Length: 312
Ligand code: ACO
Image (cartoon, rainbow, N blue to C red):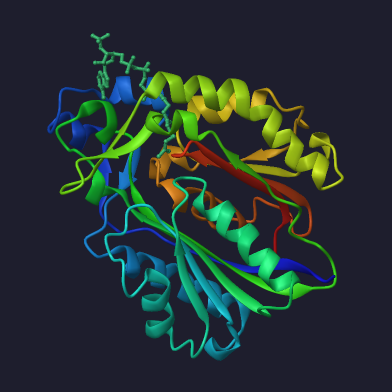
């Protein structure tokens, strides 16, 4: 069975930046509190829609891959913030980019959405259902933020990242480790169906992510046939710098491993956070081409998904 490979990446963040100092004027908080508890210094806020963000990131990935729109056989968008149900965000992206007859679908698996979509596309490409897939994570979290709730509004941001996944003789996207704990689904949720806003039991989520998930992340490496010490990079869901540091501290990693810390500049962009961080790191030349990088995301559901990939 052939494998698949990420051949190109792209990302987009809105120009408007909301700093912690800006938030001090909106709710009872401080730059010092936000940095100490979350590591976040700023986040980007979009004026446009999730489809706008997704299209910008996808166009960059497509151009970087050197493919024609007609080459793409699948478009999937991981998002939990889009209010559009039909046409899907994926169909809106395909239509705007002139992609002619792809299978299009959106996927909601909370913050684990991009890694879930990447695995789904990998399986489809391996099965011969598509030669090239466009896999996008895009979120406008500012639409589902309660801007009067200081415990959550300081965390979230908007953005998008996209990957082109192409059939390849090598399996450059490793086996997925994915799953969920539905009994604890209430720990991350959207409240109020008419004007939904993000809510969570922050301390329970923190304990889950730092105590239970390191073993799951290590399992993704084991399934890829490598040790955690073989990793050149680790890009986890960008929820909170303290989670990223506690989780990666519990993996046995090399001293020179490159760890994604985009949460500092972007906040938590849910399903967009992994491809956004990955694309920025690759564009800055921080992740060596062809070396193993662990992608690992987790969030609402409670859900998780991750795999070892090699970067273009
Ligand atoms: N500014 C100032 N004070 C605040 C703020 C704020 N923005 N938010 C809360 N506080 C106060 C609280 O009111 C509380 O005050 P009190 O002691 O007088 O009652 C105090 O700070 C401590 O509040 P906690 O909620 O206990 O703060 P905690 O140390 O747990 O930090 C945080 C909160 C940062 C959310 C933490 O729980 C966390 O990181 N959780 C992980 C959540 C996460 O990242 N989830 C991601 C998965 S879900 C997803 O990505 C979509």
